[in-house]
Length: 166
Picture 1 (cartoon, helix red, strand yellow):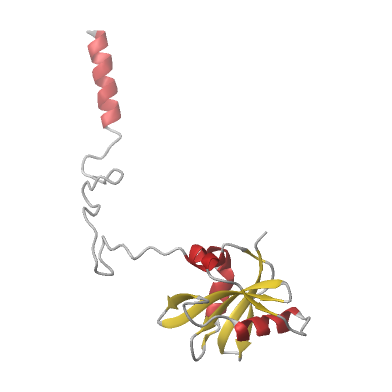
Picture 2 (picture 1 turned 90 degrees about the vertical axis):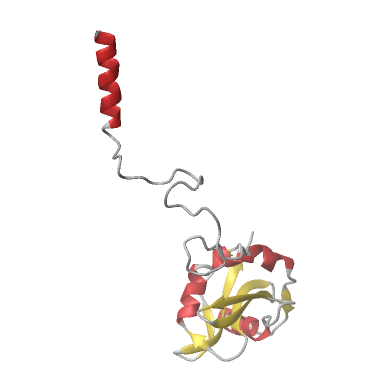
């Protein structure tokens, strides 16, 4: 009798730890609130955007090499921005908040830069800070310095970051 009572008390004590009305899904089985299929409609719970791997796409593209008389890092960054890719053959096309951007690698006098450039026009300087924070995820390399921009105090046409890919 004691064994039955002890095992019954244990089961009841463990069952009291779970709320019977809190039904969450387990894993990827599609139980309860989890999507059971995928959707093509952006914003839907089951929407899966197209998979992209920006560093892999960037690694396939050729690095743009430029020789310049400039020796200061700021001026080399400006040369990198001026010579960065602006089409799908030498840059990865990205879209951020409706702006068309191109990401490419530019080697200026042996210094490798990751360059984010607009296709035309200028974008807010906030893109530069975002690029600086996400440079490792976008390029697969560590940042080796500050973000340099080409433009005025409010809007820029490109951003460059020296990279450390070793």
